[in-house]
Picture: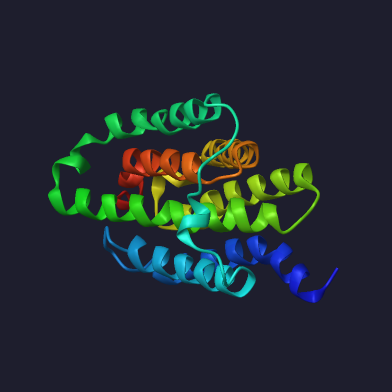
Length: 202
């Protein structure tokens, strides 16, 4: 395997470790907004990797018309809506306009970066799809448990690991079955709208 491909293969591990360090550096800052620089660094790393490995990729390609059964669209939608319970438990954060505005910005941007990297780039770059789905999903779960947990107390619950790992598994399957990230990004958007308050809870 070429060095460049090896670096891509281990990039999820490096991201988890580096974001842990970023979170630890930001931890002393006593602010509900400490997640902003954390997420910005995370997005920047993903953006660089996407540009290095898929420089010609366009938003149109990412959101191209899906193929396959509409059942996958419904499946993705149900998964996204499942996050509503967390929203209902933290309604006070949805009564603060600036929090809601930040949550909407997060929900619009984050799915594009995360799904393009974790699903499209990683799954398209390697031929052993079952192994990559498992590897990808485990590390996606670890990212939330190991890194996000430093600045977000809801992510300190060990259950966040299996939940986000399964989410990664589902989104990987939907992407591979439809050949498009459209349904995945919509579902992820809904999930982030319902769950953004977790980032404000220290």
